[in-house]
Image (cartoon, helix red, strand yellow):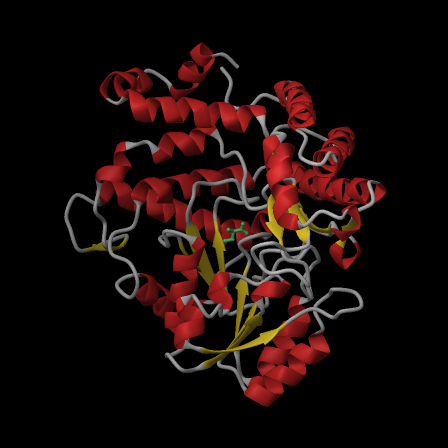
Length: 425
Ligand code: DSN
């Protein structure tokens, strides 16, 4: 990808930016090249479409629109109202949801709204522990959730690294939480929503699914949906879902008013209407057969990558994956997660170190890596490329940080990514 074609991707406005602020323009170009020329295996990242990117750089960014369609606090909202109404209807239709709120600025913001809608500070909430794959907003001590709520945690079984629903039920009965959260950032298996619903009913808890990681697979009908079971489902829109950076909440109709009030005025002021438009565009894309095929291929690729990494002597946690991500225990290589992350990065392979369940290392070091296939599948890569990627990862980790070997791997990564161009015109 030459500089000329990179500029061509950004369009004529890029020349204005280049003239006015060459420092920032240069970063836009070099970040585009970084995304094009290295392997993006961070499980929460993807390549959104040029159509979504167009909304993000639009004049909708200029408009303040506190409130909801038809009930705004400022004038001039008639155009942005249309965008939000279309987006809400698309979300309800795609997921079969009774209510949708597209305004949360991020997944964490969406989660703040969920806490606010259903709990008061000091209430007990049962959620997956961070070291076992949960999220900061599921009760980490350094997050508002851990500071303001009585978080009770559940984890995965040591034997098979799967959620222990009996333990979850026992903990729920013992602690009577106001809300139970399922959903994680590093759990490769499917969640049994029906069982969680039964536990919630038994103890009178709100069922909250943080679906940020897998909602795109649900949208593509590749895995079962939590929507029929959950009171509320929160998620980000930029992971497998492939939309703009942002958050969204689906809920039962009975919770609609509480959710909307918690988002605005409870937690946010004006929504980012350019992002709301991007969410609407992404939801339309997700309703296509093409996207459904993409979602299935994401899982096929993740399973292949996990199996190929096992052939390279690394262990897939939970016995493999049923989703878009694999958590890999790399202790057999003699290299920890931090060093593996650094060595892969130096070789043009972007992934993240990740704690594995019952990890003997600290969270800053870890014994694992997390890999996801959302971005590479968007590029059009398939199982043959997953085998190549597994071999490149293994070499990067095992080659001892040798700069020449890292440069050679980077060359191979460049050659591979060049066959699957993104954002090229
Ligand atoms: N940072 C996200 C992830 O990588 O999973 C979670 O918010």
